[in-house]
Image (cartoon, rainbow, N blue to C red; front, side):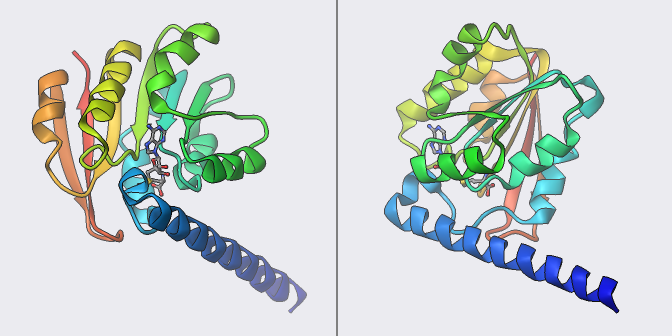
Length: 201
Ligand SMILES: C[S@@+](CC[C@H](N)C(=O)[O-])C[C@H]1O[C@@H](n2cnc3c(N)ncnc32)[C@H](O)[C@@H]1O
């Protein structure tokens, strides 16, 4: 009975913190809709679909772009092997502070365009993988191009960009830059999302 009660308490706490997270996220969206690009954090189904595209045993260096409230950050931290490098980017100061508070040991940066510079500062040569939640289709086109250049510069040959989008708008842009682009669809997310798995030549 006590065990059941403790489990119930833990689940209610988790639910409350997820609801709070959703409220913060929605507020940030209302303040900057084109930057945030979505009304609520990604679902566990989208999180799993994104994480399943990555061969975790091969990953030494990974960057997460557009971390939001950190739904993918939590999953990456669980999957990344010991000694692996994780660089997290979130441009919104409130969301960035939330991630820093939850993961004191992780380096969290602002604008994803700074990825190459930060890697130089940290002496990290190349990344095996980039996980992106950035709303490329609605960001200013120059920002999207600069971030794609930054990903191109920092991914190793054969490295992967795993990104989700709410449309196929970005398909030709990804196909121009990557040797292989695979797209899958996740219905159980608000809104449903396309997952792009892009492999560098
Ligand atoms: C669609 S939300 C995704 C949040 C979270 N990863 C998820 O899946 O629930 C996109 C996030 O990208 C962030 N963002 C937009 N432009 C950015 C940039 N240039 N650098 C870093 N983060 C950026 C936004 O502030 C927002 O939190």
